[in-house]
Image (cartoon, rainbow, N blue to C red; front, side, top):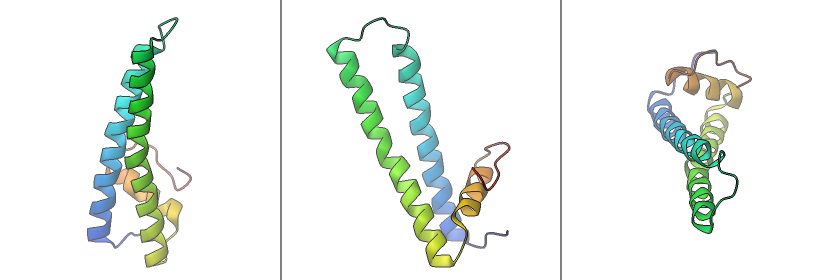
Length: 96
């Protein structure tokens, strides 16, 4: 499948990059906290805040993928795979 949505693809690439950065932050905080036997209230709040903040770019990406796929008559999974390939996700297939 060839994706011919230059402007839309650029928008989706930016959203994917933001989602990737957010995921990296979630992974970083999780890695730092998971080794602790007990979390303080402050650490629990930090984890909750990182997770809640991460949901926004993830949801924006998902909504944009759905919108552009439906609007342009594209398969959503194939569009997602094209975006992920464009930002350098290795081994990305239409299945995700």
